[in-house]
Image (cartoon, rainbow over all chains, first blue to last red; front, side):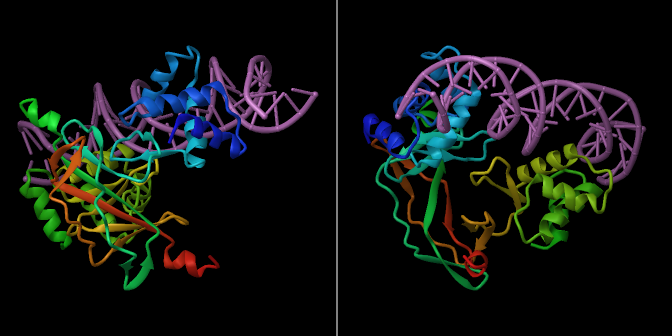
Length: 141
Length: 141
DNA sequence: TTAAGTGCAAATTCTTTGCATCATA
DNA sequence: TATGATGCAAAGAATTTGCACTTAA
């Protein structure tokens, strides 16, 4: 999705399009990593010197509520963020903890699963892969 | 796995079998939920009135290092724990946030995945399902 | 113009750690 | 009895919040 479309979405959903909000989204859009709140803070601070953590967190929260960004929790104490592209899966390097998007998705065939003998309808699923990334494999190991 | 076997594992791996360690493991074993550190603290405190958070966290950490327990990070700020049964998947209710174990595992066929055009070997994966649990579906909706 | 959003700083929540003491092996 | 583990309290991360001021609509 283009950044302009994201901006329109914000207005369409009844939120204001503030300078801070735009720059946070742009930063997330440009980052090809999956930054955490602090990394986003650092990126945004390059353009708004007195941005505050409160603003970062409040915006991440509303952007997530709007469904414009997604949140990743991978055994770290801090949460990582990404702009919602079409739904996709991640590969997490167990050496360097970097998170990569994987490109052709692995399909999971499960409309329902069994919990305590009851069949439950599955609305969504999350699939993550772990291993050593090419970079860590190359760099000696 | 039986609790006695878990206790033996602790000794076998060169750690001491302390009263606190045993009771923490027992609490995790009995809980059919996936408690977080605070819930474990509350459970253990019933039997050891002056147990400390430090002990809880240190023990969760070593038990995890030993591979006796597992850690779940599901979009919450706090981590949840479980005794490692054979590897299994979870169903998370998006209404009440309860985590259920699913019984026949869903098989994922992927020895490798593609990241930025490079094929990477998959060592492990994590698959979680989301939906409304039977309890929330029943209770009105 | 007005209410949503911001900056700031203080408060919360979750987790880790230093140190004197305790108790398992 | 030696040293790994504990309790306690303080420190550290990560995140949230109250409030006066600012700004998008």
